[in-house]
Amino acid sequence: MADTTARQTHAAAVDRDQPETLAVAAPTTDRLALAFKPGRPALICYLPLGDPETGDGLPELYRDCGVDILEIGVPGSDPYLDGKTISDSVRRARHAGINLRKASGLIAGYRAALPDIGMVWMTYPPDDPSGLVDAVATSGVDGFLTPLPARNYAALARELKQQSVDYIHFLTHDPKLKDVEAAVQSSKGYVMLQANPGPTGIKPVVLPDNARVIAMLRKLGLASPIALGIGIGNAEQARAAVQMGADGIVIGSLTIEMLLVGRSALVELLTSLREAIDGS
Image (cartoon, rainbow, N blue to C red):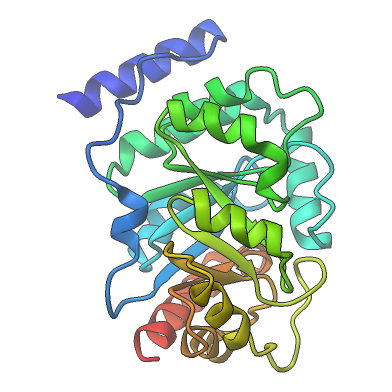
């Protein structure tokens, strides 16, 4: 009955061309925490929202292939840390009309269909963030991520917290101490650590050894789960990331690349990643 009401409210709001306000109830469980189970690393995968070349029905496909958290890419400001694959996908979505209102409505539909899976709104905040917090909160996501220092977005993080949305801290491959301290003090959900320096889409032959950085983060008091992402290009590197001490992995450009080949290629990728990190 609750799911039916949510879907009806969502549809009515879209018809009125206005943000919906009642589509998603506050979560009663911490979906992000549940994604990181002892002995089972979390699989976090980028889902391109509204990219006409990647098609529909992706949330269910991801879920069925063992993905624990959907990192949903939403167009925002210049995606400076992303390589061509993700930048092109974001551009296509923007040209297809994806804005804050439409993104919030689409994701609210994902939440109504998949009430148990973790979801994170990933974007580069626009210069004018008006309406961003309301759109994120209304969508029903569990977390918000931008690949920028969290200390620069303290006010945004506080507003999101008031709406029961975790601000996910992003740490560069060689993080600054002040960014680590901020993550130790206020990170929620998990922390994303850049596995490979440089933009997304670059796949090193050998993944850099992040074990030292992960150990340093733990020594400095970081208690949140650590998800390693950017530069993981295959199942072997995914397994290596977990062996370095990561609690989960993040796969971005590779998901889009496989989608552009075909859905069977994406299913094969996600299945191999799940098996690799489970057997690590």
